[in-house]
Amino acid sequence: MGIEQDKIEKSFAEIVEAYSAKYRLYHTLEHIYNILVVIETLQHKTKEIAAIQLAAWFHDVIYETQAQDNEEKSVEYARELLQYEGISNNLIDNVSCLILDTKHHRKGH
Image 1 (cartoon, rainbow, N blue to C red):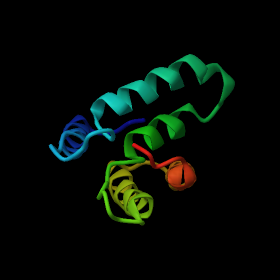
Image 2: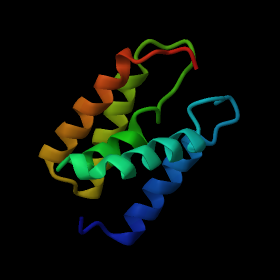
Image 3: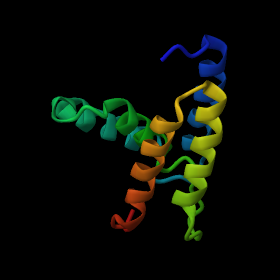
């Protein structure tokens, strides 16, 4: 995507730190890994693979157990970081919609 290596490393470290928080029981790096594995097996079914992969990374980046707006806050975080990275507004909009679509999945975890 033409992103500077230094920016990627800094952003990735922030995301890893968020998913590695001790209070996270389900929304962890292992959760992201499992999602990315599924995406990889299904990638031939979409032309939007970059948006789907980015949404997977960002969908739970902000996670407060009692909050009702984690997805919205994750979208705000994703938008800010992806703009900083120089990602196109169209891709950012697609990622944002995908993240918001996760709002109504079962929250039993």
